[in-house]
Length: 171
Image (cartoon, rainbow, N blue to C red; front, side):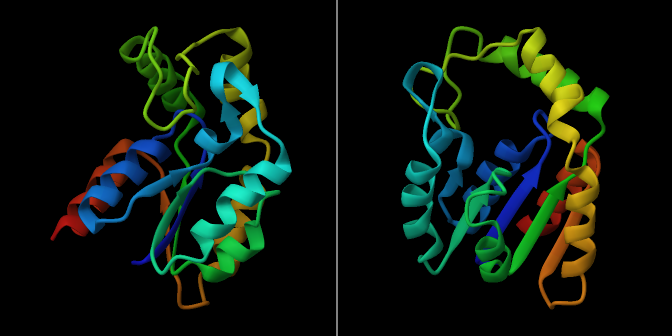
């Protein structure tokens, strides 16, 4: 595992998985949310994200965490040797996002842009529960298409699956 994509739903555990995999494999993860959100929750441009992610794709080893399918999605899929889809159910995602908001209340998570203090409001809850899940069938289709390409593909459906995956990686 040298070029890894992790994508899935808000609150599913993508960032935590990327961080833990990075520690195990000695690869610094790149978090798309950190590229997307500039200080104080200002959204960056598509061009900025493309400019920032391109040199990452040129490295020998990388972990890229986040969906952002409009930013070098096909290139990421082609270059990756490992693709991980975090397909945790919406109730768990909502619960984990709320818990995370308590842990980081008034602070910025390490995987976010500077000055983006953690928040949990109705708009974000709607995103986690409904809007952010609209591409689920597309993601499953992508994983199905990748199955026979020789890439390592994983669909992790629970915190238990994620922990089991990490335990296997540590060995």
